[in-house]
Length: 108
Image 1 (cartoon, rainbow, N blue to C red):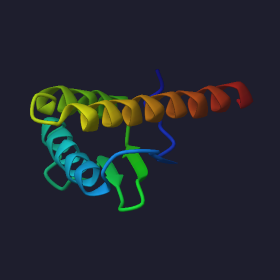
Image 2: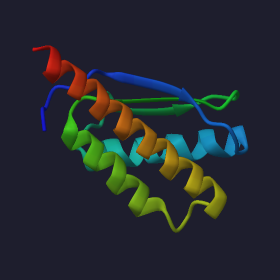
Image 3: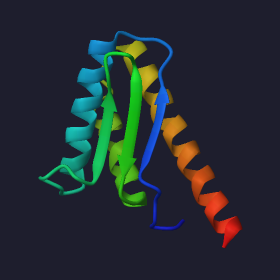
């Protein structure tokens, strides 16, 4: 897998309580950056706003692993419905990222 990522992926989340989603996205982002040894929190961004718009940004594929590990580390604390929504959001992000990378490799 290429270490170069097109940065930001944005999409809407169709359900869930926005405040709860936003809280857990923030916790997952913070934990992921800690796992990736990034105290400035610049490598990984995971945001969900009040309208359930989601934006996820990672610098490289190692950061994606930290994002997944962060979710796994916190999963027992996250309410089940919220956890399912966030797991789905991260899967959507990964699929969209790989499609971007695939299109790039085909155009080169």
